[in-house]
Length: 588
Image 1 (cartoon, rainbow, N blue to C red):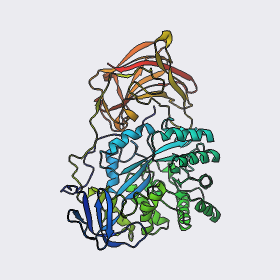
Image 2: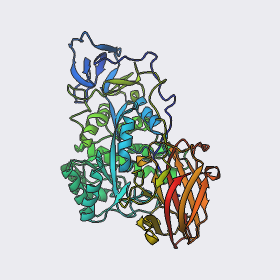
Image 3: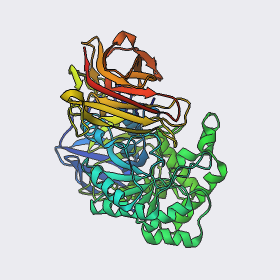
Image 4: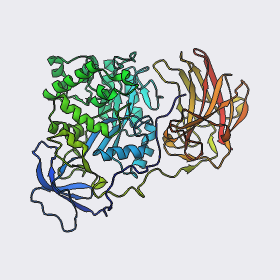
């Protein structure tokens, strides 16, 4: 059964904080610090004055306003907040849920991240939730791949659009733009790290068309690219930056020149490929390879010395790549690749802001820009290991970690669950949305060879309105699966409390194979019960007491107070064609 990757949970004691909260004034002054402003200027002792979340003044002889709240950082290092341009906020990551992931980045001095994991339908509720959390700024990337490509091997087409021609590329960009993504991520390279069978790759005409349409819409494009050949295609297609390092071989000088002239940058994500960290991991055979990693380091060095912009990203959320800590490790690896500590710090601040198109808003310490600031106990532009000594993280002028940050008690975390409506879906809407105005989602199995599924609504016999239909050709897998999920809240983000009811009721018929009703909850928890289908309509009631835990990573007991969606699905013999129809999905 396909498992969703959106996460939720309580905040808990996630922060190490000062004991005295800051009563935020409209004006704040940071004094006594040695400022590395990210512009290339030498670090110097300066005062920073902040008004309404933005930097008002920076200088050696700045007078501190009489109404300012003063934060004395005692000679510590003051830098722009760090960026991580490649993360996945998944339930399989470390940590696992939004509040804890946000806290991990603040502890590491990271004030802006790009999340490559979410379905566009989830952007709005996540943005609303993040606005209430203590969190870094989060940029959401709309995902586009090829049929059978990387990123399309686990997600539905609402999460990752599949394209294979210039026309479909334009249509995909136009479709996701309605959700206001912050950038576009395209999985153009199907190379699987030289460790697994390759996925499909995107042809140059399709990639170029997608990039051109994204640029018309004012959106930057990053690509999942790991091979030199595909990197050159991306450069010719005018991609803004590569979302990985090139590692199958070392670039020639001519190839470096082509990339430099194209203006494309690179975000090498060395952290996720570092072979040293995989020594004690059972997953090390998947991506760790010392030869490939050495190629990646050498290519970063060649590209940087040629003038290609290098940014910071980690692929955090993947195995052995924890959120926050991996960002700091990435800077150490950039130094290992040949950058100086000051150059690595610039890559994590100003250069990353340039690559994401946010350099007019943040990324350096200068008047008019956001007061996203990190304070270190040390001199990270001289000794890169000092980045591990974060003393304060400030977002929009507010200390959220360390010096003068509010205590953990009473901080916003997980919102109270919403009460569930009795009717979930009567399948009368023909626009793909439920009676709750949520977007239904296909939930096929995972892998390059996936079950082919088609779902929608159709008229029910005898003029009885409409029903859900789903038909599927099962993949050649051990346990192929096809299903349809109906979110209880937009994007299946916010939890819903169904505990006022006794169970789930559905009118249903379909193939006589293993059919199941599943209630999915927060942080990857699921509970499931069988549905005895036949070719004839029947109303089946599934008591909550009959739901059994399915692949529950945290072994959570059923409470009914943190449910995000209901899912109906079939697991039939490989290669067979299966079907189901459903009507009036509700709680009783």
